Length: 353
View 1 (cartoon, rainbow, N blue to C red):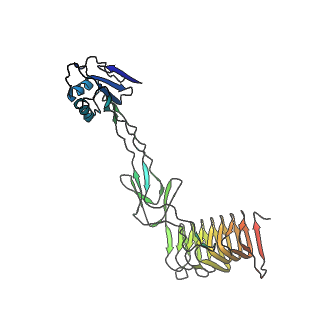
View 2: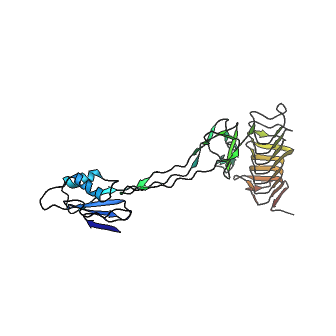
View 3: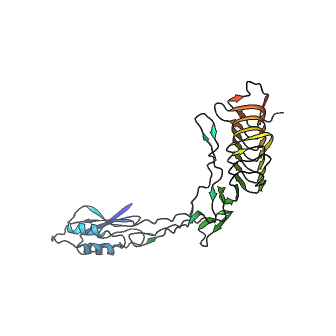
């Protein structure tokens, strides 16, 4: 509701009632109930005289209006002899609440763990990335603290308090160092980054820059393992995390707590083994024993003994399962099964007997 009075205003928030605040009685003032706006209507005086902008300012002051006065409008009203029409002469300002604190991530925390499907339907595992590498001292996350906001005011001069934003607790996790002001998170060592369930974790990665053979030795590591080159016959890899092999794998033994990715493929010569807690993916797998807790994905498999707790997914228009025994607890998908040589191929979709 808007209140109107000739010669003064009556409103809430302790605005006084003013009668005859201006000897000329030239101005009528109206103020909104929320005391955020005021308007004036000028009427001509009988003697033809014209009040000044200062007269109008005094009239507003006597009416209890002290803040947000629009000086330019006051001048226009009196110098332009603008009669019988209301013009705004004061405007309050709403308070602006503060923003909540937030974390700015300066690196991608999730690896692009999906291979690219090629035009022929096969999958390109060669360019698949399982890790997001970070370097010691690298800035990973910056915290932006909550802000206080800004005060507003009524045209009566009363301040309007803003609501302060809420700060977030420190980020949980391990493998990072926190700055003294608690705003910057940096990697404590070279490794890979992961952010899951509101926890930031930097895990160490054991990397073999070339081939894994007896000149390097077997690998046993609590984190993730990356082999840039090939893995020779008889080598053993045990990782608490995931294993990524960029080249070809011969009859080796691979054990991973999480996932295994073979960008080249594997020829196990009937003795090569893979055991993974998560998924196993590769260009091809031949004559190997494979167990995985998730899905198994490849472009083809030959004479393997395979058990997957998830699905067995063989990609491409010519994606084939040839020979061996293949069990997918959640199903099996392939374009071709067996071949013209009538190699015995055993498939089990589900728990089986």
